[in-house]
Length: 299
Image 1: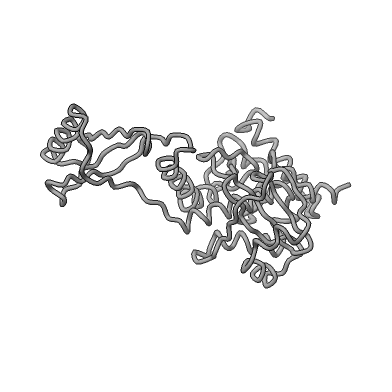
Image 2: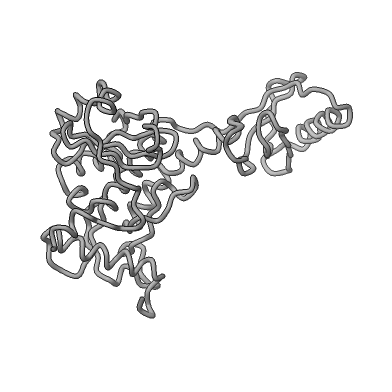
């Protein structure tokens, strides 16, 4: 780490990316963003780096659901995809934490309250807790008409004091399932890049995957139930040309290096068959930028 570096992690990942890119066959002292393929020298990890020329820590899956730092991406890619895709992954997790007793409690989140005596009026509230184990509702002055706020508070206080049941409806924040799926596809791509390097990220199938979450709003992300014993692993089927990236509750299906896009599209019609039909090579999820294929080329 140099005095001007943002952190030791920035320097470590930058150095790993430079070495990986050299192993791939591109000489130089620069790091290539695996998503947009823009090149950056070490000034991009300095504390005073401008937003337009800056490398940032990238988590996969997103940090909001417990992901780890696996690579650097440019600030533009991180910000743009974070607000469009990763935010929906976080919103999805928040929703399922609220309704699923087996997940941790969600952080307090905004919602709306509608009372039966005036179904046309919605009061903005804050919700904490989860279904089945107690829910706390609080209403503040912000974005609420004083009269509506007073009525809602009186109703909620009456329910609390009497121990009665709540009659009304709660409006919960929604998440965009399509964007959440694309967010998981982005995380799968970053894990494959971090594990195997630019050999995957810059390949035809790697660019196919990145273009899917960058531009293809209608791309169908295929997810499967996890393979027993491999909930958080990368599974590669070299024979079929398909790989699977596990994020606990499901596997995201991606093309492997030896697959054509046509072959991958055909495989996605019945992906379950590949889990039992072909030999799967397991890999742990990456701990940083390992780039094992790039580095093997350097030896």
